[in-house]
Amino acid sequence: MKTAEALRMAVEALRVNRLRSMLTMLGVIIGVLSVVILVAIGTGAKNAVEKEIAGLGSNIILVVPGQVGLGAAPTQSRLDLSDVAYVRRVVGDPTKVTVAVNSGEPVRVGRVEVFATLTGTDENMPHVFDRPLRRGRYLAETDVDTRRRVVILGSEVAAKLFGDVDPIGRQVTIAGVRFRVIGVYETVGATFGVARDQEVHLPVTTAQRLIGLPRINGIAVGASGPDEIEPLRRKVVDALAERYPGEAFSAVTQTQLLGTIGTVLGMLTGVLAAIAGISLLVGGVGVSNIMLVSVRERTREIGLRKALGARGRDILGQFLIEAVLLTTVGGVIGILAGIGGALLIQAVSPVPASITWWSIVLAFGVSAAVGVFFGVAPARRAARLDPVVALRTD
Amino acid sequence: MSLGDGRGTPAFEAIGLARSYRLDGGVMVDALRGVDLRIEQGEFVAIVGPSGSGKSTLMHLLGCLDRPTSGTLRVNGVDVATLDDSGLADLRNRTIGFVFQSFHLLARTSALDNVALPLVYRGVPRAERRERARRALEAVGLGHRLTHRPSQMSGGEQQRVAVARALVGDPRVLLADEPTGNLDTRNGEEVMGLLERLNKGGVAVVLVTHDAEVAARARRRIHVRDGRIERDA
Ligand SMILES: Nc1ncnc2c1ncn2[C@@H]1O[C@H](COP(=O)(O)OP(=O)(O)OP(=O)(O)O)[C@@H](O)[C@H]1O
Ligand SMILES: [Mg+2]
Image 1 (spheres, each protein chain N blue to C red):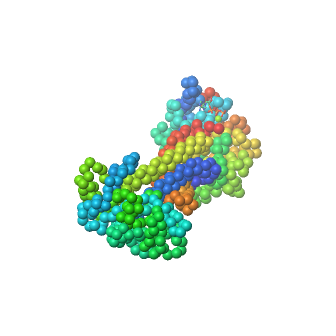
Image 2 (image 1 turned 30 degrees about the horizontal axis):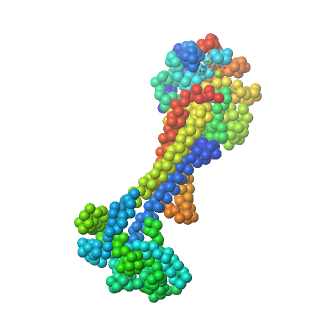
Image 3 (image 1 turned 90 degrees about the vertical axis):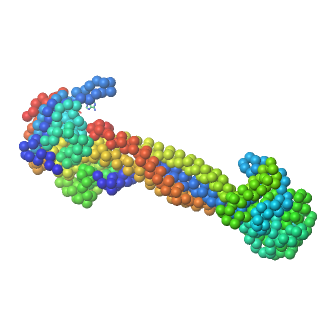
């Protein structure tokens, strides 16, 4: 018997039992749909985080005191501005090293008050980080040297305090001290939950006096290329370890962050896919079950077909094709529904979804394989039926 | 493929044909206890006997739907013991036509597709299949029922569809197990007429019947009792 003929027969048999075929397919549809959607969400989350990290700028090394890692307690910083100068000498190019002192303070204009993240930094910040200005200028060396009371506002802070008014040259009050606005940043969004548009930048020296401590929170170093990151990182960490024997310093690179987060989210996607895979497997068991029922129900039909000249393998093919047809048609419907579902989730919720071709290929391949795997047992049972026994069954 | 086309080769030749069934408890039931039988090409034979005597068992063996426990069976000169599953399927497909008491038509399938089914397993292209099935249905007087399903036809019509299905592949022999058993006299008469016409065309017909009137129309009657041939006339 030709394959086209067998296919036609299988379609006919499934069409005759339309409702049952649909319900059987439903198991596969749900399985495939969840594979596609969950993988899309996992991949979407990973892409979003990677984009955030990349959005910081390129080839950045962040040096912080203490051990960075899951479960590590934050360490009291013992770094100060002399260490920044030291790292500058170690790195060689002073413009590629910048500094951060962090604090949270309310920022006030007249009666409007906004809580902002204060970041004390210096003139080299734009050489290391990717932080475009919308208006005004960056911090200058003299701002830092003379502890000038100037600020650059994140776009959200600027909007809340000044609305449509151009803030350049205007005054804001932080902790009772008046500052002059010299610039406004472009909107950059959030990184790791840090809303960078709610930051206010000021000279590091000014920030230290405002906070009342001579400490700094971290040093950022910009490498000139991806290949330079690792040697530079080691050089900086070694130099600091030499300066402060017995103390730990960490230097985190974007590559490391990307790597760690990528691995975690990749695992998460894998787990989601596995859970979805299990539901696909359950769908497969449903197919097997229904095919067994179908073989039993159609015992007489099988006997008759054999009496009329069907060989064992014709019957095997017929039932196997029915099973595979159930799962592949279910698979295609599931893929389409999954794509639709992922797009819908993307549209109505903040969860990013990114449909990946491999999840579609995988879902389809697995559902076809499920059809073969779970179809074989019932199909073989059908093929082995003795024509006499089958014909005598009532 | 030629399966001993010579006029001299009998359609069926059984030597010591026996079939026993083992019941669940291990008890053996001897349905057929050594049958010697020769049926020539083009014969018209009726197999008669009381219920449970082994008539259907014999028919199933002749039709290669079942394998004997012992003994030899040659169909058109070919020893069926030498054939594998696909060889037997081919033999059933090309040489033998079946008509069953309970019609055995595929439900939810048109008369035309039911009749064309044996040709599917012979690899005949669809268009030719449908044409031959249509001609077979016309031959049994059902040219106007091509698209009807079994549930939309009378018992007599259904059995005529079954006869059309049996003859669509131009078999050498036709095996009919109580073909009129489920039909009233008029419909039974019609089906018998069809079988006789087929027989005149050269097809050997072997039919099992309870009906003495039906049996009387056969040139040869084989009486079966307790799994043995009692009388052959
Ligand atoms: N699958 C089976 N398992 C066990 N015994 C069987 C089986 N098939 C048939 N038999 C037994 O074999 C004997 C012959 O059965 P068979 O069907 O050939 O009778 P029959 O002559 O066709 O009867 P009827 O006229 O009622 O159709 C019976 O005693 C029956 O019970
Ligand atoms: Mg019987």
